[in-house]
Length: 383
Image (cartoon, rainbow, N blue to C red; front, side):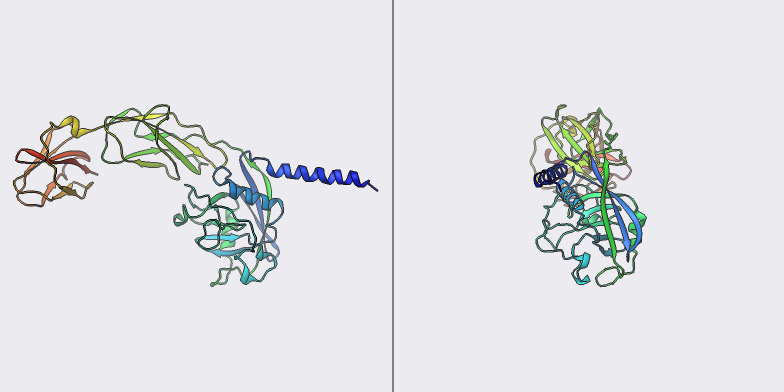
């Protein structure tokens, strides 16, 4: 018989090792297999990877539950074709079907970790109780279709990497049309199987091409880049210095472009992008630049001004602009970007139309004069 002290030391050692193991940081995206059974019969295996550098609290919660075999024999209790499958409620182990989805009192909750990630087909996201955004526990759902209305409202923390065909099978299960519970129980058994330590590539910047000058400050500037296959989120930085010490925009995005507004004239801007695949960030792209210009201040002579509220609409437009708030006898002059006069019109009513439909797309400065005084200037945008 083993002496008690030795047995105690072994138990303590195992406990310490287990505790250390549970606290080891993720090296990338932890991966899991979800083995599914329907009515006790093997159905298929769904493989998922989680995003610790997008939703670390949710990933740690899921991983700790897997380590204790919490999910084993719980059910995918809610299936809605065209939307998602939901599971992970402890009530679904042995409790009455009417209690499935309501969770158990005392379950630890996880604070919301909303991000720029998108609810696309295959995304794994946290379910919650009612409108409390911080009420997520063990339940999660897997999208079977893109569902943008959930973006920024639920915490995305993983995605399916294999076995979406089994997700499709589950979501198509015969179900109670009132509760969306499958008629036959679909159990899960979740096991951690490894880690995806892939570091994503930086995207390729597309436009405006680096070194572009003459960018107008009135419309937004669309910054665009190329997609990266495993990117979940893109991060954009914009600055007025090359070291980005005075960053004016630093934002996570789930898209391949960003419309930058509020630009200052006669300013050089620097921008760069990097990707986030849920486990690692890429390097930043090379820094690109563009230069703004204030066309009206540089191309048109300065006149004495007496401001009034004159508004063109719609602006931007396809080339047809209506001005209101005009004074009879005033003159509207429209110029191209070089300062060349394009249209000049004597105003005979408080409302007048300026037709530029035969002009190329772009920005056209205008000014309104009354008694040789400038009362309004601005820019018309043909799109």
